[in-house]
Image (cartoon, rainbow over all chains, first blue to last red; front, top):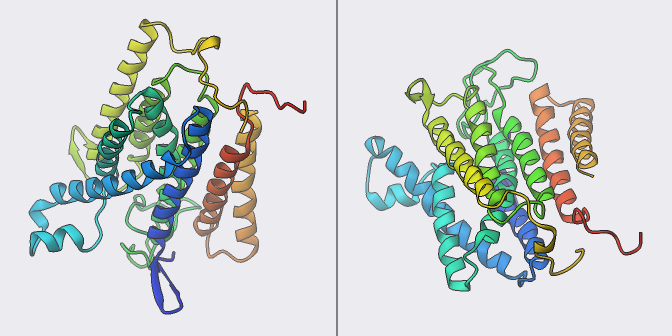
Length: 263
Length: 60
């Protein structure tokens, strides 16, 4: 795999390229949805910048909290130096930042979370390409499957001759389909239901893929990500049950938020 | 429409993987990485270009 590329004397991290592309994709899809909802498409770029800043702070902060016992050196050096970003920390930090932005824009409603319901799996699918190409350690356990592979030149290299499960590929495909299906259903359900479905599907996906990943168990034979996934699944399921009891999940035909018939 | 879109994504993944193998990818995992990239590109294209479900094309 290829952790860095050199262009004109400049070294570019391949993970960073896909990390940036994930936000570009999110911005494009969000802009389209905002137009459909009759909102300014420029808001998409405000949201994305806000999510990037909040997400980076959250992902790095969560990593520092989880690994505080093994950190060495000054606090500032640990905050700004080296690698170490955790997805669920990024999700939390990005969500808080976007909620604050939405409050400022008076757009703090369930349409906002439904936009995130599509953007999150889309961004995740693209971001995982960065993990795969960079070999950043998000790969799986040793395996002899025909498609198992080594990452000897990754940022977290596998030992020579060892092949592992390329789990970032599994995650791109599974969450890509989640993004596509939720996007297809964006006008089918009442506001908020799409996000609840995202919570359920993202929880199931990560829970399953963790069985092939190399993260260590923290409780009841499960990894930290699996426990967090269970949390997402439970919250999503409760949300769906409450929505179903209070008027059903499907949007009524007259309630469709159409601002432009087709974009 | 959704089934066709899913088929398109699967097709992009398979074709890119096979092309990578044909052009000498080191192993199947590396070839699948090209399939992964093609899958994501096709996904974004479908999401941006496909008609909004339930909205008829005025020219139909």
